[in-house]
Image (cartoon, rainbow, N blue to C red):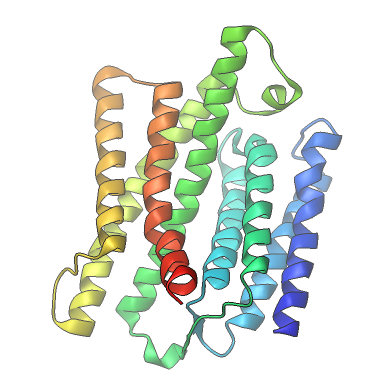
Length: 266
């Protein structure tokens, strides 16, 4: 417990420089940006490396730190490859810092340890796809929120320092669509891998629990939103709200279920 707490505090400290940087200096993908982002990624990854060495951890704190690490790592990759994604840092990093604080507060509720050898290949694939899906939708939701802030600033003609840092409405919408497409594809694979894992473990193709139900609803929302966008050109705040709704459902499916089972019901 003491080691886990020390690692959590170190991971939180690693997040702070990258979180503060956009508010202290004009945004730029310079050496300071990459250095601080690298430190931010390394902190949660170190926590996971040490904490997961005995096996896969099922607790809420573990799920939250995995979310932070995966989102940061994916954000770093997208910042290097996709135009203007790096400008989401002023919204994404504070949000992930809050999640890290929540994870630290719930360290006293450790979950069960599942030895790595006890996990089948299908289950490992399903876990990996679930993590990538949630990280994608996390960044997509932040992009949707950024578009809503930008449209509000344009409508009121009162831009703020934050909106000057964030991507433009056009760039934010482009990021949204790309991440939605990727999210729909990976979430579809996730549902299929989950069905395969369920069949391997129990012989049943689909177990209709809360997690599966929320995941299915999220998939339907994302695919429906993409279809409506292609047919009608819906964009702006309406798209942002729909993305946030999809993110709410997937949050209820992933850390939300863990919160209920590991905290409220124990």
